[in-house]
Length: 126
Length: 210
Image (cartoon, rainbow over all chains, first blue to last red; front, side, top):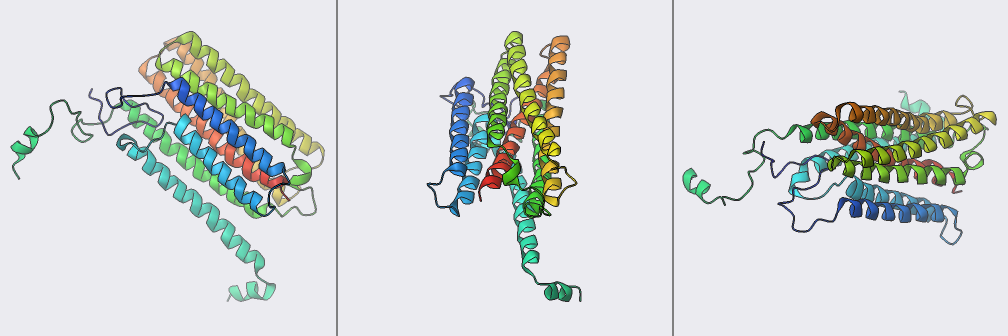
């Protein structure tokens, strides 16, 4: 069976014909582990230190988590921007859109409702 | 357009494009389908995360996250799960090379680390329930146990799956279908670690930040 150029399974490696230099799988996983450990340690430090501006801590933690999820996707799940990975990345983008809509939508609507006074809530029923 | 000329211009050594090569190999189709399942699983977790975020302050006079969560135990759980994700990656490298003994070794390490994670999590749950922080106590605790417990159930399923896969490798060897299942398993295990990153950030770390 011919291996198509533009298709690749998630976590798949590129066929050797396509790339001149490819780091060994062991090196990729170890780099990923190193980056993930650094980001996790930073997250725990950020949550416990008093050196940082309090209100910024939650935002900082979210940024660190997104960075670590990126590290996991690239180094453990081998997601790349190469054309043979388009299908996987498109599916991921759609999944992330759903995640964003569910999270941001729920939090937004519910905090709006929490801020409403009793009479405003009664008016909503008419 | 002159089709014959266009075809002549194609370099003879160029690999066929996706449409010319016919259907994709089964391994690619299977892993892509499993990737779609994982994304739908992540969307389900997003709903649980959203309900947790909405209910986190509804403690009904009961204990809050700040009083309940132990950062030491969370740090250990995180370390165990991250290390097991790494050894799972090394196991899939051994599977690619069809080296049976190395596969068994890394599968065993992955299993032990995953089981250690689960033990710590269950001890944490038991400790909370002993102190009266049961799922029935408040909306916050219901959301907490649903979200974290659902991840724990996924890890349990992953451990059972890993044990079944090792039995299959023993009985059937590295056949194509066994290799496809191992590929799906490692996708699943890495995805669980991604969800845990969101979990320890949103539930545990942001829970102890005042």
